[in-house]
Length: 245
Ligand SMILES: [Fe+2]
Ligand SMILES: [Fe+2]
Image 1 (cartoon, rainbow, N blue to C red):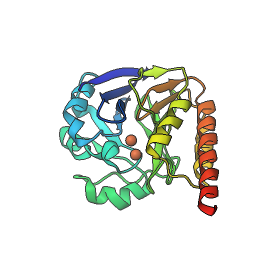
Image 2 (cartoon, rainbow, N blue to C red):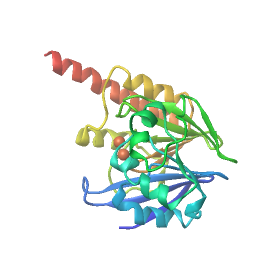
Image 3 (tube, rainbow, N blue to C red):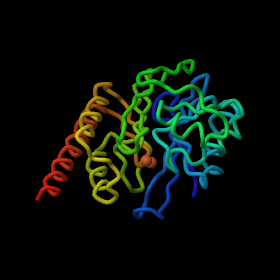
Image 4 (cartoon, helix red, strand yellow):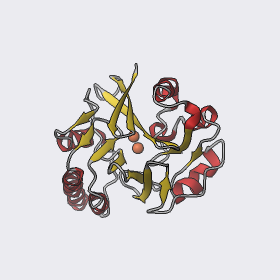
C-alpha cells in the first residue's frame, strides 16, 4: 500500500490510500489544509499512520500541524489521533461540542481545544475553515464537517463515499457510485433530517467536495449534494414503507 498526495484545491491536499481488501477496491482519504496553521481532517486508521504521516511530511513538516479535526469518532476518522498528537507536539484536536465533550476529553492523549460551535471559524492564516454540525449525518451523534472558505471546499467526510480505484479529482458522476456504495454498505443514518441537512450543505455552493472515500469532486458541488439528498430521501421514504408494510 502507498499513500498518494494530490492538491485538489489551492493549498488543500488529499492524502489517499487504496486497499483492495474492502469492496474490491476502496480509498481512505485525509485532507490537509495547508494554512500558516495546518489542519488535518481525518486522522486515518491507526494502522495506516506510518503511510499517511510519511505522505503528509512530503507537503509540510509534521511539527507544523496545528489542528487535527474529523467528522466523527470512528476508526478511519479518528483512529490515529494520538499518533498525530505525539508526532506534532503543537497540535490540538478541534471538533464540535459533542465530539469534544463525549469522546475527546476521554480518548485524546491531550485535552482538545474548546469545542467548535456550529458555524465557528478557525482562521488558519491564508485559509479559513468553519465547523458545521450535522448530527447523525451521515452517521454519528457527534457528526460535523468543515468548509474551507477561500477555496469553497467542503470536506464532506463519508457523505458521497464510493468505492473503486478512482482518480484524485473528477468532474464526472459521483452520485451514482455513492448510491451503489450505499446499497453495499448502508452507511448512512436515514432519518427525516438526513436530506434537509445535506441540502443545507448545498447552500454553501462548494466548488470542490473532499470526499473521504472515493474521488474528490470539482464543479457544481451544490448540484451533487442536492442529488445525494434526493437519493437519501428516496431511501428514507422506502424504509418507512418497508417498516409499516
Ligand atoms: Fe464514518
Ligand atoms: Fe469514513
